[in-house]
Image (cartoon, rainbow, N blue to C red; front, top):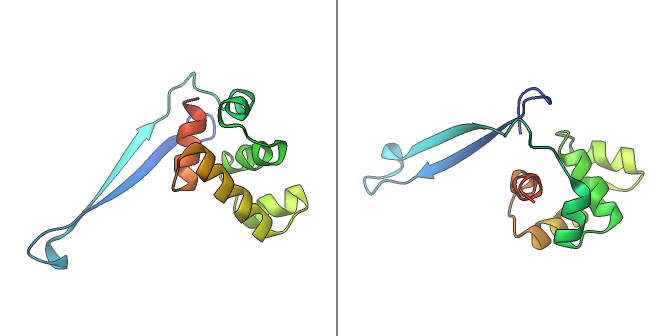
Length: 108
């Protein structure tokens, strides 16, 4: 996620391989403005994805663009614990990236 917190945008990158080799491969980057009225509703997401209170807190900090270290400091846990929470959230939301988590949460 990037941009002004009041008007967040989603950046996505896609690699396009080419049979001619790596030198012909392309990268496509898209920018998508998230809906203006769209707000992070962690209460709905908590119920929909069966998140724990701690996982919900981690998501709230992910939405702010915080690093694992920043989240760990705020929640007074280790970075490894944050990583474990993120792995569990990814599994529950069927996501493979931090941004993917937020897409699922914002769309819940």
